[in-house]
Amino acid sequence: MTDLSLKIIDESDKIDEFDCGDDDINYFLKILAIANQKRKLSNTYILKSKESNQIVAFFSILASQLNTGNARIYGIDKIPIVLLGRMGVDKKFRGNNIGRIMINTAVRKALEAGQLIACRLLLVETSKDMKSYYLEKINLGFECFRDKKTISLLVIDLLKYENSLE
Amino acid sequence: MRNGIIIAMTTINGKKKLEKEKEKINENLFFHLEEELIESDEDIQRLKEILENENFDDSTKVNIKKASEFYEKFKQNNFSISLEVLARDYKP
Image (cartoon, rainbow over all chains, first blue to last red; front, top):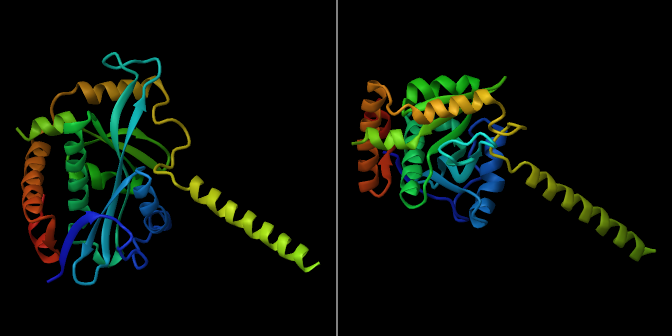
């Protein structure tokens, strides 16, 4: 049995061995995640093996806003949002529903944050390749907000999500 | 002369360190987009559609409820789970 536990990253965590196959995402975990944590710029949650202490997956979340400029929505020009900033699953652990539980947890953390300080949307940037993974396989209410050449911006309306739990 | 070399090396090392720091700061980005998240009237319309549409479809609602039940179990277990249970039981 490989027991896993979720926690917020700190300096005691073994980050060197993590490899999700994407240099930018590895770089974030290894160089920026703890620094951002200390500066309260983003929170990084890790799923790690209790036995080996190896990080199996992580995601980072932070508060942000969508500026709507002159076009006000509900009379305001800034929609409060939570960014699902970076996420990765170590190559060795893929195919075990780890991505699914990490995204589910990120959504729930955003909902919990919304109980204290209002936030309406969870926003994630994904590659075009991964778009259908979020929309169809994860299927937690992600909607496509914008498509660019190689990336897509997806959102979950946290109000709709909350109403779906009733 | 030796002092001069040391000062020059310190300056070079200092510059390199500064460049590395700058590089790190520049790369502390969560998104690859170079422009604003909202750019056009179409983006605003799309955002309004998302916010004004009150419900998810039924299959999404069912999936959200299942995911919620799984999360509550995960939470009750102090956010611990075995890899084997996760792979076996967490199905959409």
